[in-house]
Amino acid sequence: MRLFTKTLLATAALAAMPMAANAESQFVSGTGNASAHLDFQVTVPRILFLQVGTGADGTTNPAIDQISFLVPAASLGNGTAVAATAASGDVGNGTVTAKVMGNNGTITFTSTTPGALGNGAGDSISYSQINTTVAPLTSATPLGHPALADGATTTLTLAPASGKLVQRDAQWTYAYANSAVVAPGTYGGVNTNNSRVTYTAAMP
Image (cartoon, rainbow, N blue to C red; front, side):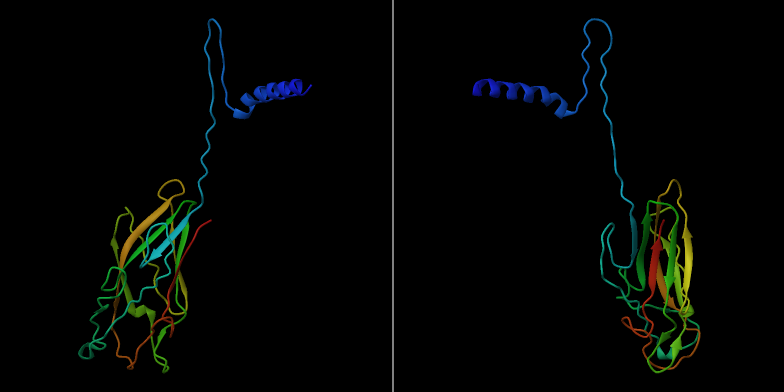
C-alpha cells in the first residue's frame, strides 16, 4: 500500500513539472512549422539628478562648495569685476560643474536666495552683483543659470530635446561685479547672512 502511494505521488510530480517550467514548445509531426514565443519586459525607474559643484553622476553627495571673493582695497567699487578665490568651486577659481538630468519630461529649474548678502552689521550686497558666465561642457545645449535675485526665486524651463529625456550640463563661473563702494565686513559666509543659494530641479 505504501509503495503504491509513493508511485502515484511520483507520477503526479512528473506530470506537473512541465507546467512549473512555464515555457512554450510545439511539436509537429510531418509537414508544417513549429513555433514558440517569449514575452519581454523592461522596467525603467523615474530618475532626476541635479549637481551644482562637487558631485558625481547618479550619486548623492552632501558637500556644499563656497564661492568666495576678496576685493582689493585699491579697486573697491571701481566696476572692475573681481574673480573668485582659487579654492572656490569644485573646478576652482569660482567655477562649478552644473548638471541636470531627468527622464520624465520638462524640468523646471530654479534658484532661490533668502535675501541680499549681509555682513551682520546691517549692511548688504545685492545678489545682482554676482555675475555668472556659462560655458559648454558636454551637452549640445549648455545648462543655463537661473539669475540670482534677493529674496526671490527665478526659473528656467528645460524642455526635452526628444522624447522625455532632459540632459544638460555646463560650467558656471561666478564673479563679483564690484560696481559700488560698500561698507567693510564679510558678507555671507557658511549658511549665514543669507549666503546659501538653493538650486532646485522639478519634474512631473
